[in-house]
Image 1 (cartoon, one colour):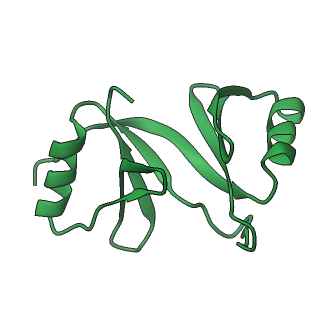
Image 2 (spheres, rainbow, N blue to C red; image 1 turned 90 degrees about the vertical axis):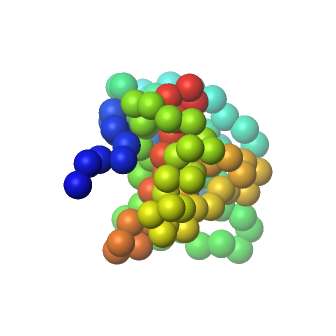
Length: 122
């Protein structure tokens, strides 16, 4: 079987956090990471050539630190959103976006692990 996509690396891993400010302080002040970009509920940090994203959960939501990774984001060598989405859907894979960003390409592997594909221009 010929590969449908060419993944060039792991772009980032997401950790859900209860308190974004506290988590940022830990990763920046203690571990020496730097901010790539952020919003009121998320912060993407540089960790060498990879990244870690901290997503603050909504009030009342639990964080299961140490027992789960929210998703793994994979950067593609080529492709655009519509073509990548169509390729996955044509393979019978359910694709979805995320809150506040419907153009994210999220899906699950056969065992239920959540994956995200990032286009080269993101």
